[in-house]
Image (cartoon, rainbow, N blue to C red):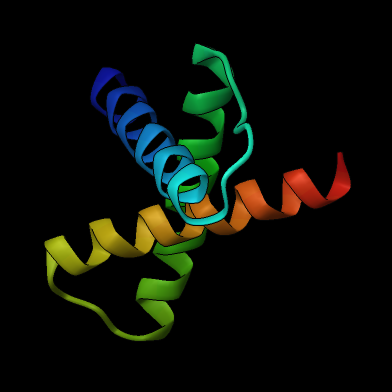
Length: 79
C-alpha cells in the first residue's frame, strides 16, 4: 500500500511537471491531489499498457506518466 502511494506521488509529480513545462501555467497543487492524480494516471497507463501488451516496466512507467498528463489536461479543461 505504501509503495503504491509513493509510486502515485512520483507519477503525479512527474506528470504535473511535464504538463507545466509543456504548456505553461499552473498545475494542480497539493500532496493529496498529486497522489490521487498519480494513482488514477497509473490506472490509465495500466489500461494503455495492457491494451498495447507492454511487458517492459520502464515503458509501463512512461505510460503511467502519460496517463497522469492526460488526467491533468482533462482536469484543467474542466476547471
